Each structure stands twice: as C-alpha cells, then as structure tokens.
Amino acid sequence: MTKSAQAVWDNCLSFIKDNITPQAYKTWFAPIKVVKLTDAALSIQVPSKFFYEWLEEHYVQLLKVALNKELGETAKLVYVIKMENTYGNNQPFTEKIPSANRSTLKSQHVDAPLKNKNPELKNPFVIPGIRNLQIESQLNPNYNFDNFLEGDSNRLARSAGMAVANKPGGTSFNPLLVFGGVGLGKTHLAHAIGVQIKDKYPDKTVLYISAEKFTQQYIESVKKNNRNDFIHFYQVIDILIVDDIQLLSGKAGTQDVFFHIFNHLHQNGKQVILTSDKAPVDMQDIEQRLLSRFKWGLSAELQHPEFETRISIIKHKLYQDGVEMPEEIVEFLANNIKTNIRELEGAIISLIAHSSFNKKEITLDLAKKIVDNYVKHTKREVSIDYIQKIVSDYFQMDVDTLQSKTRKRHIVQARQLAMFFAKKLTKASLASIGSQIGQRDHATVLHACKTVDNLASTDKQFRKYVEDLNKKLTV
Image (cartoon, rainbow, N blue to C red; front, side, top):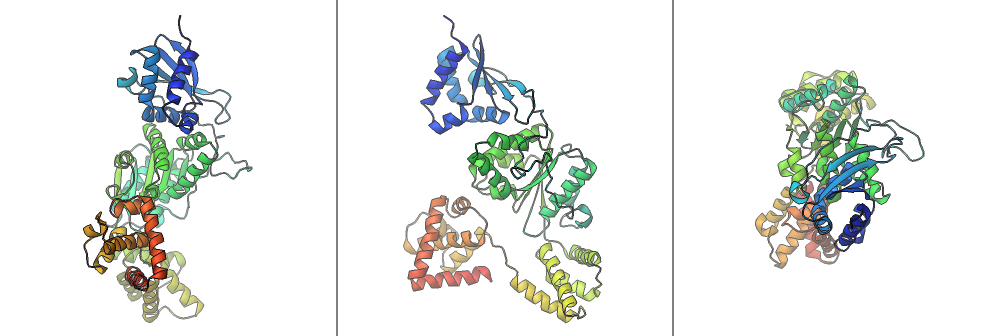
C-alpha cells in the first residue's frame, strides 16, 4: 500500500520531535506544511527563503535520516517557499527549491531570488498604529561628499565610496567595509554614499542603521514572534548601510540573522556598506563565515588626517560658519589637535563660541586656552589590549601571565581588574572581553566585575589598586 505524503511527513515529524528541543520543533517544524509525494520526492512548504536556509544549515542531517527511514536511500526533499500575504499581496509568491545538499538528499539546488517588493511590508522603523508605507532612509543629508574633504588619509575609502554611489551593487566593492578609529569620518562617509545614491537613483531603497539598532529590532521581532517579517523587510532593501558592525560581537542570534540577510542581498546584486572601528582580522567574537563575507569586497581604512588635510578641514568649517581666522591660529589648531576630525571640529566650535559670547577677537592666546582645555577634557578611548598592558605593568607581570590559567591570587586579581576596566572603559560585550582576556566566557567576566566591586568596598589595599589603575587609564 502506497503511503500518503501526510503520513510520510507525520512519521518524519515524530522522529524529529524526539531528537530536538520542544522550542526548536515549534519554531522550525510546526509551521511546515506537506505539499505532495511524487515517487521518492517529498515536497514541503516553508514560509520564507530564510526558513529554508536555516533548515538546510542546521537540520539537513536530521531530515535526511528521517526521510531515508520512510522512503529509502533515494529520498529527495523539495522545498516550496510560499509567503502568504506577507506584504498584503493577494497572490502568494511561490518557488520550488530542492534540497541544497546533494550528498544528503540527492538533489540539486535551483536558486530563485525573492522578487516581491510590495511596499506594504512590516517596517520595524514605523511606530505601531501610524500608517506609513514608505521606508525612510534614516540618512542625514548634512553628511555628504561635498563636506567630506579628501586627503591622503581617506583617499582610498572616499574613492571607493564614490564608485559605489555611482554604481551600487555593480562594482567589486561589495561589501564596502570602511574601518578606522573614533572620529575619523566613518559614519559621515557611509551617509554620504547613501545620500548620493538617493540623489542619483531615487527609486532605489536605501537604508542606514546602526548595528545596535539592528540588534534591538531583531530581539523585538523574536519577542513578538515575527522574525520572518523582520527578515523579509531587510531582504527588500537595495542598499543596506550598517554602522559599527563590530557591535554584533558576541551576539550569535543577531549575527546569524544578519548572515542570511547579507547572503540574500549579495546574491541578488544589492549593495552592502559597513563601518567598523577595526579591520575584519581584528574583530573578536564575530563568526568566521560572517568575517569571510566582510572580506569579499573592499576593506578601506580611514587614518588620522595629515597636517594638510587638517588645515583644509579647519578652513572649510570656518567658511561654512562665515568666520575668518588668522592663518597662524589655523596652523596652531592643525598642529595641536591631531587625533581625529571630531575633536578638531569641536575645538573650532568652542573657539568661535567663546569669541562670540565674550565679544573677544579670536587670538592665539584664546586658541591656546581653548585647545589646552579641550584636549585635557577629551576622553580618550582605550582598547582592551591597552588595558591589559597597563594592568600587567602595574602588577609587574607580562600579558601572557595575566591571561594564563593559573589560580594564584595576585594573578587572578590582576585579571579581574583588567576585565573590570575593560567593561567600564570600552563598548565591548562581556563575551568579547572574556575572549580577549584569556579565552574566558561572559559569566567569568561578570563574576570578575562583581568581585572587584566587592573587594574595592571592603579591602583598603585593593581599593588603592582600583584608584591607581583608574588614574593611569583615564588620564
């Protein structure tokens, strides 16, 4: 007697249910519908391409065993992707995809992109209750190429950005990853690319978002059980700009969903632009499969601006504000604020403000006073490597000893202090801090921070350690 498609699938589900957690079953197998059984090929319906990719990546072996038990070694699995009324469309979009893994279920992969671009998709940027069918770009028009001045320090990144803006998705710079230290213009350049694309290609959907906001939206979608809507929204973007991509560090779920969104966009000729405070090779706790994709295109570094560029930036800023300033003061500012563009512009604004409010001329003495005050109070961002070096030097040991597995009390305390200050002075996640300080997990870092707080309030000598290190790290 021939088995029905439903009976085969019910038996498969029974086997699968015994081998995974109830939550995983509810999320990834309960929504699947059986379509038909033709010879040894079972067709099942899944709600999105992401859903199919997830099953192929995480459960293909389980599916293979279950199906082979029912249909024998020649079993094939065909996915039917059907997004019913996801965007308010009357006709669902359907595509058939055999299993991608030939060695498991003996079939070939036919790749068909998502084509539905109906604007009535669930937009995570829209406040519930307010009808807004447009996807706002979230771009700042003040950040454009006209006021992103070119110099030796940014020429490659700027040129690549211009090329992408002129032909998004059509250059080898996909993704374009712009990286560099704080205040060097990464966000400015990312916005400038988006602004120019919107001007040149008004029909294209451009979206700028910070990695932090992306993570928040993803968490919210999981809570509300509409993760697929979240994924579908990002899959229809033509140009996706993600700022501070390094903040995905240690966030496995967010990295996974971004991986699938990235793959879909890249495979369909869409442009991805990323910014980071470090090069891909230096990113901690980002999955290798994601890092490998970051390296597919171009990684362009923004360096500290050289003297001539700093002069140009000052003069451009003064011109924009309609202010004149003697050449010697311009050169003084350029010579004394070298770290980043944000500090340089901040000092100029402070100087102009003091001059206006106090009705004083802009003099060299006033400039010196402002610069001394500004540089002194500008908080310096420190790295985890720098913190480990300072702590190791303070306790007269090397960094390898600090990171070692030894349980000697003074070394453990030094390691805990390094973790404490890494949490206090950097934006790194607990997982990232633990990974960089001796390959510990996030729970160890959390325990270290609590221990330091407790000891600092009860142990006078330990409190002195904290105070001394705090001075060394925050001067």
